[in-house]
Amino acid sequence: MSDANVRIPEEAKDRLAAIAAAEGLSLRAYLARLAQTLLTPDERAERAERASAALREWNGYAPTPDEQQDLDRELDRRLARVAGR
Image (cartoon, rainbow, N blue to C red; front, side):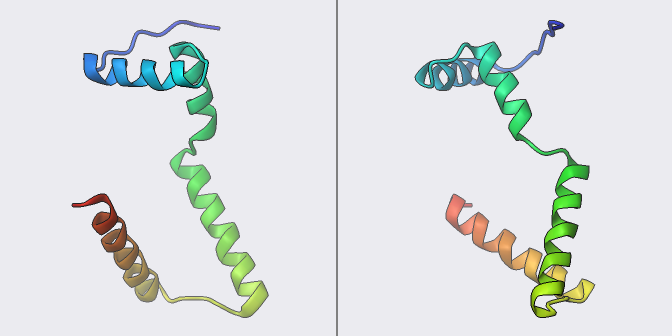
């Protein structure tokens, strides 16, 4: 296992350390677990394509690129509202 130095604001480090401690983990273990749970952009794209294929096969749902863009905008709008932005 290699070590890495990452520069982040002290507040962010303290927050991550508190979250890790609350889960009974060291900051190192927490960050390693976090890295395993996040998807890369390529992994997200592959999952999205698999989900789209499953929907097409299941019920014929196949939005056009314009419809998909509208749906993405609506999702972004709703997420922003929930996040209070």
